[in-house]
Amino acid sequence: MIDLFLSAFHFLLVFTLIAILAAQSAVIRPGITASSLRLAVSLDRGYGASAVLLLGAGFSKIYWGAKGSSFYLLNPLFWTKIGLFTTVAALSIPPTLQFIRWTKQAHSYPEFLPSDEEVRRIQWWLRAEMIVVVFIPFFAAAMARGIGLS
Image (cartoon, rainbow, N blue to C red):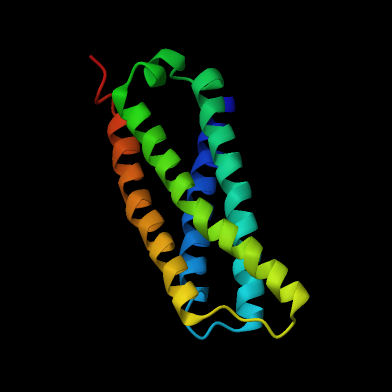
């Protein structure tokens, strides 16, 4: 029963992460408004929390799930998934740092809005994250079917 709960929670978090990334991509546009900027910052916090919970749920499946730790830890596709997830996490750092800077500027200067050039730079990072995220389900589906195990 714990495996069912962990798997469902893991899937929900994956969907949440992707939905937040899509929402951020829709909100972060040249000509961004102050309310959209606040929303983007809130989404980024949710994105980080979802990523941490996703990692926790995934690693919980390794140790308390039905397949056992060797199914995952001995499979190179698992490590490829972890590598891709780590890449997405690394790609999310520049936008998060920029959101922190923008928030500080907005607190100091209420009329602050980022330049279109800064926004385009963040869009690039978000697109890069989305491109990498697309590959993770393919490796997950292959791994779930035992591909990669000798």
